[in-house]
Length: 64
Image (cartoon, rainbow, N blue to C red; front, side, top):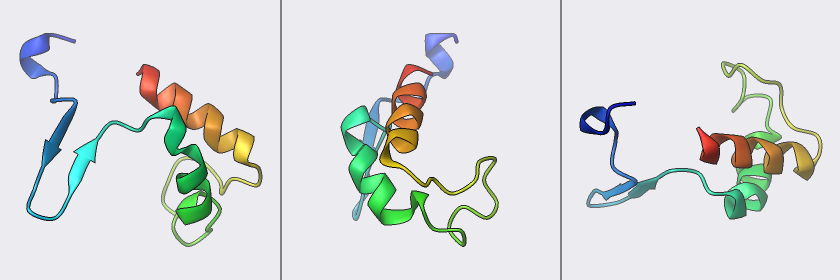
C-alpha cells in the first residue's frame, strides 16, 4: 500500500489509544470478547474456543 494512504501505527483520542493488534494482545482479546457469540455475531469468523485460535489471528492481523 502506498505510504501516503497508510494509517498511522497508533493515535490517541481523549479517551482511547487506537493501535494495531499485537500478538501479546491475544490473551486479553480471548478473555474479553473473542469467545462471546454475541460479540462476534457479525464477524467473518466464529467465536474462538481455544486461546491458540486467538493467538494465530493476532499474529495474522499484525502481519497484514
